Structure formats: structure tokens, C-alpha cells
Length: 591
Image 1 (cartoon, helix red, strand yellow):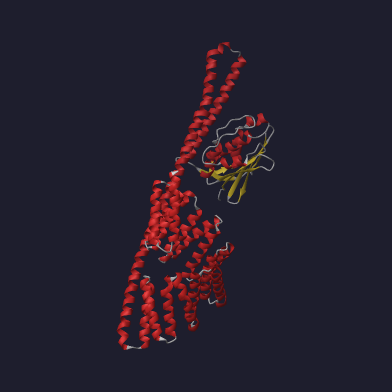
Image 2: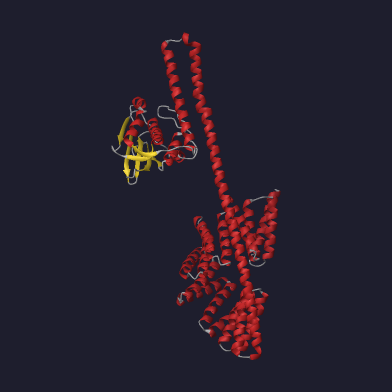
């Protein structure tokens, strides 16, 4: 009960953190840490992944990119562990934004593409729309405008499909921008007006400001200053309501309009107001652009008394620009270092996962090995011991035919035990790196004749028809001993699962640079479920033959290992007439 209540409190923290995003990053950081502290006492991996994602966002907004990436990496690890694909996609997008911020666009694209693929696989089209939009933004920065347009259009399609009005509005603004950069002005205007319609219909005033500002920037660059002035006049009231981040840029653009109109006093006032806004918002890049504009304005007016002031503006702008460059360079190094740390961490995690899988597999194989020794080997040995003791204790009382029957049973059990031991040794050899192969030319007709001769008694007992279809001079490039073991195993299975008077076809043929060998029977066949298990890494439980023949589940495992060590493949399929076909592909002999 306590745990449920604490997790409810964590959920409240996470909701509060979402409300702080983009508004109060200090509070966002504080709330995310509180959630993580609480989860330390009452663990929940999925909530922890979300809390680390919020923490990463807090660090991102605070400019602590190294810490942001570290938090994102922890979030990614937890999201993968809990199967939170939507969270994983969002985290990959956010990591991409960090790299985009420091100009590492190719790395950014890698992460955002991962997010897009994850979202597409999970059919989470809202997440795919977001990732496609971010991809478009990065291509735009790389000046790959056609690629940017393609991803923006994909984002627009998905946002329209899910009636995401905010997404539609932003994507239309971005499309208008990228189309203008490709000088497709008519199409750009259509998207611009559509963005405004979306804004009006859904009361998205902040986005209306962004759309108008984007249009004004285009008008200023194309020297349509009167139209730009009117649009900027409409922008300022909107920015006052909720978009003050762009206030300095809007005022600088107004100063550019007045400068172009030769209204120097108004331009100067707008510049000073823009500079104040940029300093209040700590937008130093904007401050640099404004100070350079102010210097140009003073020189244009030609007031010699102001030249010193113009020089001070230029000097201050240059120093600030150098400081920004140094900070960006250090930030970039920090992010690259974080990326390196993340990749090392990921590689170590992957290595541990591989080692863990191999260890589990080895343990499973060891358990199966001892199970076979304990059960399949001990049972016949116990039988041999019992029959031998019976002979020793009661031989003088037995009739001749009873003694012969016991000896036949002893021979049969001894042969089965010997066969099992051989398979156990073969399996151990197949798993060992010490197995020595001596590949060379192997005449297949002679090899198959030798393998088939082992089964004369079984063929006679079950009245089987055996057909051999092998060209006389066909050769494979393989190790003869291991290939012989494989063929004996496959023919043994075909005989074991054939009905009385069944048919076995052993064939071989050249297939380009390969040789194809198949062993087909028309017996009981293999179920789809069992087919999936046949070539698993561990032995499968044996299935009884049509005459009650026993097995131990090692044969096909040995076959697969030996074929692969000969650079070949082993497959299984249903026989059209019923039964099963095993197919071996091996390298052909190269002349």
C-alpha cells in the first residue's frame, strides 16, 4: 500500500516536471531529482526511465549538455530494459538535439533516425512525426533543402492524420521557410497562409507570432520593407503574451526595416530596444548581431562624434563573438567526450549481454550433457548390469534359448550405449576449438555408399526402399570424417522415422559454387513447433521412432555444428509426399 502511494507521488512529480518544460528548468531539475530520490526507496524501472528523461531535459535547458547526455543514456538503458519503445524514441530525439546544438549534425541525424525507425516499427505515428520534423530541421541547417522538404512533408502527413494542430502549424511554418530557400515562393506562401489559418482556428497565438516573424524575415531579405513593417507591428503584441524569447530578434528586424527606409532615428531606437531585450534574455548571439547593426547605422549616418561609439560596439561584438566561439568549442568537446563515454558504456553493456547469453547457453548445455549421462547412459548400463547378474546367478538353471535372448539383449544395449558415447564425444568435439578439420576433395558417391552400408540391418528389418541419386564424379570440398558423421546421423533419422516399407532418397547435385546434398523420407514428418527447436543451441528432447527407437537429442545438433565448421549450411523442410527433407549446402571443389 505504501509503495502504491509513493509511486502515485512520483507520478505527480513527473506531471509537474512536464509542466515546467521550456518554462522553468531549475524547478524541472529539482522535481526530477525528487522523483529519483523517491524511486531509490521504492524502485520502478519504467518510472525511473521517465524521471531520467526529465532530468536530461532539465540539464539541456540549463546548458549542461554533458550531464544531459549522461541522464539520457541512463534513461535509454532503462527504457530498453522495460520495453518502453515510445520513451526510447523520444530520448533518441533529445540526444539528437544535443548534438545538433553543437553542430554535430551527422551524429544528430543518426540518433533521430534511430528514433524514427523505432516509432515506425511500433506504429507510433505521433513520435514518427516528431522525429521526421527534427530530421527536416537538421537537413535545413546542412542546407540540404530538398531532403528537409521531404521529411517535413512526411511530418505534415502524420500530423494531419492524427489531427495534431500544433504539429501541423509548426510543420507548415518550416515548410514555408524551406520552400522559400528553394525559391518556390508560391508554394511557400500557401504553407505560410495555411499555418496562419491553423493558428486562428486553434487559438495558437504564440505560433502565430512565429509564423509572422518567419514571413517578416523573408520580406526583409527581399527588401519588401513596407510589408515587413506592418507584419512586425502585429508580431509585438503576440510576443508580449508568450514569446519573449524572440522579442530581441523582432526588434532587430524592425531596426533593419527602418535602416533600409533611411529612418535612422527610428532605427537607432529600435536597435537600442533590441539590445536591451537581448541582454535581459541573455541572448548573446543576438546581441552580437544587434551591435554590428548599430555600428553600421552610426557609420551610415556619418556623425563623427559617434564614431568612437561605433568602434566600441564593434569591439564589444568581436569580444563577445570570440567568447561565444570558445564556449561553443568547449561545449562541443564536452559533448564529444560524453558521446565517447556513452559509446564505451554501450559497448560494455553489449559485451556483458553477449557474455551473459553465452554463459547461460553453456550452463544449459552442461545441464543437458549431465542429464544425458545421468539418464540415457545410466539406464542401459543398469540394464547391462542386471542382465549380466542374471546370467551369473542363474545360468545353470536356464535353457539355451533363454541364454541366447539375454545375450542378444546385452548386445543390443551395448551397441546403443556405444552409439550414445560416440555421439557424446562427437558433440564435445563439435563444441571444442581443438577439433581438427582436414578439408579436401570428397567423392560423394563413395562416401554415401559407406554411410548407407551402416544401415543394412535396419533397411532389411523395416523393408525400406533406398534410392541414391548422385552423379559419379561429383565432389564436395569438406572434411571427410565430419561429413561422414553428418550423413550417418541424417540417414539414421530418416530410417528411424520411416514407416514399414517406407522410402528414403539420398541425392546430391552441383549448384553453382556449392554442392547440394539431401536426405528425404516419406515418414511421420516434423511439426512446425519442433522444427523451430531442431537447430537451437541446446539439445532437444528426443522423439521415438516408428518402431519405438530411442534417441538422445544430440544428432542434429552435431550435424549443424559439423556442417557449419565445413563452411556450409543445414536446413529442413517438409517433403511434398509426406515426411521430411534435410538439405546440406557445402562448397564445391574449385578447379
